[in-house]
Length: 340
Ligand code: NAD
Ligand code: WQD
Image 1: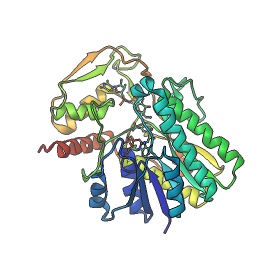
Image 2 (image 1 turned 60 degrees about the vertical axis):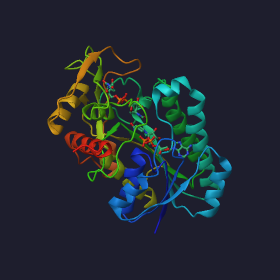
Image 3 (image 1 turned 45 degrees about the horizontal axis):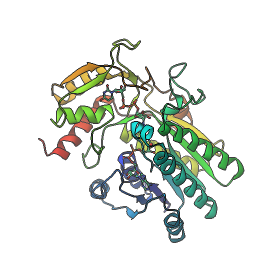
């Protein structure tokens, strides 16, 4: 049985990926420092899959602990989610982001070399495309100057991986550029658990509907889009998780065409903020309190993926709708808040 290390595996996307890996027979070991997650996520994973993954509380910034982990564990592949991800915080504290998102990557790649671990999957982001010149966005679209230190860490990370792969033919890596992940597992046993005030649209919507927030601010209705609000490609986190398993199988089966590949992970469909709000009201039966406010600095007008490459080469495409994602996000929010 292949043993896969999932870093950040108690986080939002990591926990759903652990479940997807377990369902395909992988043995999973999770590393997380609990900086943005809770130990109870292990219970949620076990509730769904019946198997509690091995877990080590390690801060990947501590190199000796990373080295010690790999001395003790024989790992066949790594899916590296662990990172800090708040765009605004990264502007205020760039060094925190450069340290957490880059040092940890370097330490892991060093261990891949040290222990001849071939398979490495990296969590990248559509943020690398900035304001795109054409839509939908293909993987060959130019990487634009980063709008934040967070976005810059994703660009630099891809460069670090590319440079390492170019001199180490034993290493093979796939960088997955996520668009906007939303939703939760249908069991409502795991989901997104933002600390403090949510920065992202869907958790803000569900917390508003649950009564934790007074109202949602819709950031701008004067964009050059059909209803004036921004357009994004919202992908169900369960579909996203499955793509990681498929990418890993591609590497293990040596079906990759180069030792560093990049794939967009999105639905290929753009939805506006107001469409998301309307869809949420429909699936939840709740009236959402919202008001239109000024644009948020740094927001791009419209972003959605060209999914052809992932469809053709990974043989993967999304199965779930935005409505299913919003409904699962709402079930999760209600469960967390103890609402009926
Ligand atoms: P998350 O914060 O829920 O999960 C990240 C996990 O990593 C957390 O459990 C956190 O405790 C852990 N972690 C952070 N630093 C660590 C360290 N030094 N050592 C050990 N563990 C550490 O975030 P997520 O939404 O699941 O995102 C996962 C990855 O996907 C990140 O790399 C993120 O940048 C990327 N990504 C996320 C989105 C999104 O919208 N959620 C979009 C594109 C890319
Ligand atoms: C979506 C839309 C907002 C909150 C961010 C990161 C990106 C990636 C995904 C990691 C936008 C609008 C939001 C609110 C609103 N993460 N909005 N009111 O900005 O597309 O991407 O998460 O890599 O790097 O930048 O996602 O969920 O913040 O916003 O109107 O309270 O919702 O303006 O149009 P975004 P988001």
